[in-house]
Image 1 (cartoon, rainbow, N blue to C red):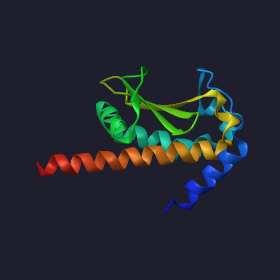
Image 2: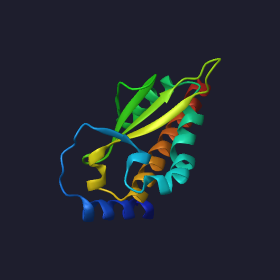
Image 3: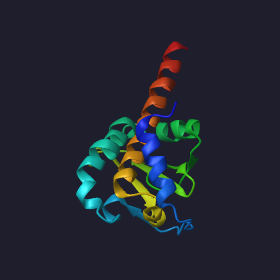
Image 4: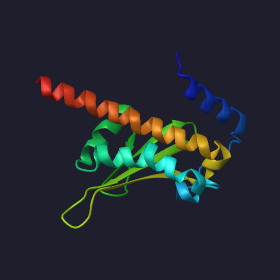
Amino acid sequence: DVPLPEKIVISHYLLKADGSKLTGNLINFRQIPDGHFYYSAFQKRATDPLCMTFGKNPKSLLECGIELGAIPSKYGDYSIRVSVLPRVPLILVVWKGDDEFPPEASILFDDSIVNYLPVEDIAVISGMTVYRLMGLKRQLQSKDNKK
């Protein structure tokens, strides 16, 4: 059964989607109209967990992403492109930290995303995607520990 938050996002998508093509212009969450109002929640729900989970081993983002059906992308140290809904890709990016800088993470969106989802739902799908990846990482680690 589909969880209620996902049903709500899908309903909003079906109501708002206008068929716009992807532009190829990537933006971050703050660049989405009204994104600055939700940025703190977005950061706590999506980018902070992404960084905490994959920042020390960014290659694991690629491994987990492939399990989820994502494709490798060209940003940061490691990044993946996840198609959450038709014409709604997320680019999850991780930079590995070093002696001078801590790990960082970012999520990028095609700027056409505003033609498909409201800003609140963009935060929700970002968090859902990150948490699915986190679950996959735990599963893969569990399998490795059993070997």
